[in-house]
Image (cartoon, rainbow, N blue to C red; front, top):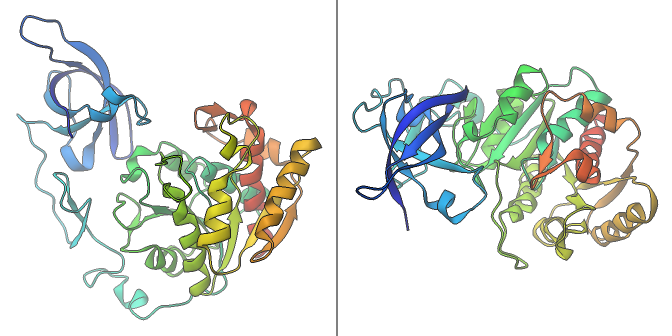
Length: 360
């Protein structure tokens, strides 16, 4: 199940909060040359590799060509292990895996926020934008910022895809730009500004600890899908709608829309959105339906109408959102497609942000 490989670090390519991208040479069979590849080290877990270090890699996903960003993953620096962690924290995340880690949960007894969260069960009508993919996050925040500058937004990260928040380069870029006030990692996900056990306490922490005006809920980078009706990690978007509603929030459903995806099930409004919001979400939400031009826009409107039996459909004008997206401090990409190849996807996400801001 795991391909273990030994490698040597040739250099550090770049670093960002909690992660380092490395240039490594993977050892080959005896007498054979090694092969170069990129490797990713989560520095909070394994320490910071340096040129010349020997590292132990997990190359499973890389060798299979899976969507991991093209990385081998550093498991350890055998000759120079990371220092023992200090400080409190009893929540174990990535539980019962070789890299399980303890963190201080905002909702655990040793947390300074435990008293606030212990009996909390209401987020006071906070708008909660729910999206399927991590790539929607920057666009949602762009829509919020354009509609209501100065709004404090928090990202509540689900554990359906990448578990380490450090895998995202978008999160630190958005935080530096002032578009993202806090990241809360929930479930098995870890590495946020705040850690919580569930999406429910994640939303409560976003409101009551991080002081968010709006929360955006989505999985981390990546996605897991099987081409079946129910076998995809995005079903958690429907559960997030339920969590937001039961806590007294205002759920806003962000549609996954594509004009460029070659797969029929994702063309127009993706079946992921139709399943998550139409079948999994039992509580009503505002479904942000982007006003898009031409026949494609009409197709999106007709497909979204299927959600009207349970939810409130809200048509959201997209004028001016392309400018807001262009001003983001990062390159937009979804499923390998930049904005120019699939603008409808990003406009739909920005429209959800625009509507959420209008609820304040």
